[in-house]
Amino acid sequence: MFLASLLTMAIMVNAIAVAPDGALWFGTGKGLSHHDGQTWTTFTTSDGLVANRVEEVAIGSDGTVWIGAKDGASATAALPPPR
Image (cartoon, rainbow, N blue to C red; front, side, top):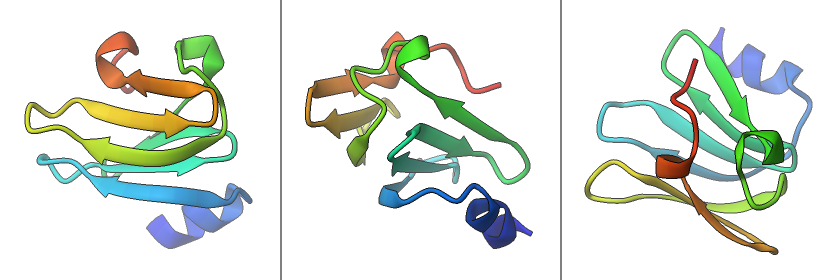
């Protein structure tokens, strides 16, 4: 089910990171996607990302998710919580 959900999104995944709580974060050409095991949430520039094309994803020791894009960097501390 999880893989099928990812494939039906029809997007290119550029980066993947696993958070300490087991949640998965995906950097894609259409934003930063979060999967908690049941629900998908995607963040875009409308939510505060510096760019929609996310090239890198890293998890800080405090759980902050950092993303790298051609236009700069963003952190999840600046984003609304996953829905």
